[in-house]
Length: 579
Image (cartoon, rainbow, N blue to C red; front, side, top):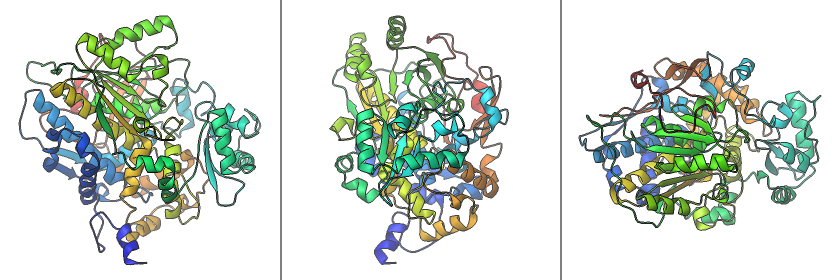
């Protein structure tokens, strides 16, 4: 190995080998994060950076625990630290200035990255077949429950040896399957390996270029699986290199600063009194809403009963919110939505660029409406490819986490780490959660600017921007990767490119549970009875603490569409903040 290669594999700013510390690595990543995002942040956020502490309760907290070569634990810990700096600065604006430590619990960060797979109801997690009966079925097209249709979202080899493509049936599956010459349903095909062989056999009839053309024609999600080097050479990759991790820009309509509503003794949570409308599905966008709810915002998630969503993920990402169902093509529901908009402070848009705009709600139009009421609005947009603000080539393409992981080079890094000359999707929805953290920081920056400068603000980030930043940090040192390969279950390293994200994540979770039981201890997890689900839901506690305020949720999770479409009469249990 050359000196240049050795340096590239070492932690940021380090030459020479030493025992790797996640906490020390998080400090380095925080420095890189500030370089990328400093111009998008209010300077008041930055004064708290020196108050950040990365804390652990066990050896697992400071250890690389996940069988992945990328610095996910350090990156999300650094993002949570910056979120804490933002919360501290916002609390100062609310009139309670004091010195505040910002503390990030490293064990909880790692558990947060796995939370889609460790959140459970009465002990039943995502992988337990009994769970399905406990969760309202929003899988309207059997894209999740039918294994054959589920695997229409997968990474497969094309007819060109060594060339891979990720097709993605999304939440519907029929169009993608028929696009590659397969029937929408095959009732007799229920074996996991047989499904993979059937679908990969169909994909292998096409080249990557032909699949790209089919995806354009049928308007499906799907991408060629690129190394990061190849991604950077694409037109879209070159355009994205000019963007920071997120952007926060004025929407061009002047309105006065919006002071926070004060309570008698100051706020117990920094976003108390703010109203957030969340227009999102699956994980990344809803994670932004969940985090804003943890800071005290009233977050109303609006979905349509006519739109599918992954049933189990709602158990995780709907924590702290109210949820309601409105169909924004129905005049009656539109009128209700318009009334909710009248007093909303933040809109979170997790759909492909243009989808919400085509319903009549362009950010510029919402800002104009907000100006007429004399109070600006914060519009937070999260998507897969990024670059809408600069007209990047792929900005309007549909996509999900696996799509971003495959096109930016994350999947190739995972495969190389596993000793393969092929890509593999990484375990857990880590890019989803990381992107949710980025979107939260962007939202807090917009909220702060509205409070201090006035106006309306648009905040943008994407799964690809998170991955670009993550990849820029390099992989772990060789000795760390070697140790991960030695310690983790050999069964995990038997995975191949065509294995599903569920299969990859289940094997990874089993190995992590065995190696690092401290990540699942009672002080890491929180439980509460959810009336909506009729059981005890257990989820990861918030990794962040900021002196003088509370961070956590005041209501348990509920499924999509559970509540009335109103801001009034929300139940609240503040004892959960002290759990």
